[in-house]
Amino acid sequence: MFLPSPVKMRASKTRRSLWSYVQKPFAQSGVEPAALSSVAYSESIMAKHNDPNSINLRTKGMIARFIGIVAIALGFVVGIYGLEDTGGPWMKTALGLLVTGMLAQGYALYCSVRRMHEFKDQPKS
Image 1 (tube, one colour):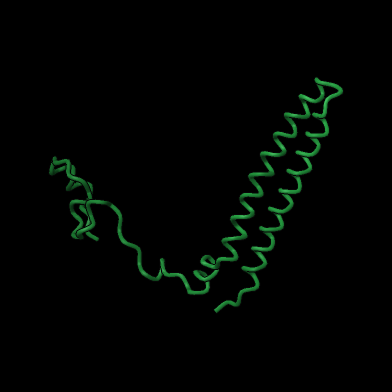
Image 2 (cartoon, rainbow, N blue to C red):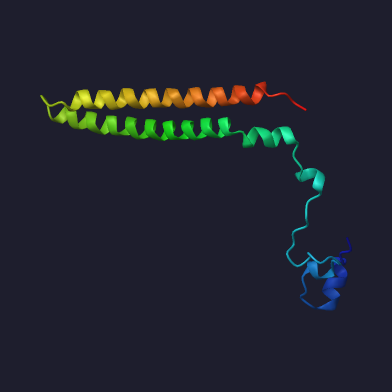
């Protein structure tokens, strides 16, 4: 790649970009295309990412994680309300939400561990 020396650029007193000296059609964008070998993936790696079971486990895990976070947060909010309102069913409701959130987080952990074991068990080619 030909780049002018800094002395020549100062002497020319023009404010052209360094990329204008590059003799390539993609020089204006400043991004060169990557070599095919650095972008190519083996078929086994692509098969892992396109496996419907692993996508299904990932989706289930993400949903369970979200439900768990929301249930735990609501459990704490309802529990605080239950401390102020004695004699109501709010403490049992808060406990139920906390337990539901913990179970959902446990299921999300199970999904992620099972998904990682499926990736490990696939043969490498």
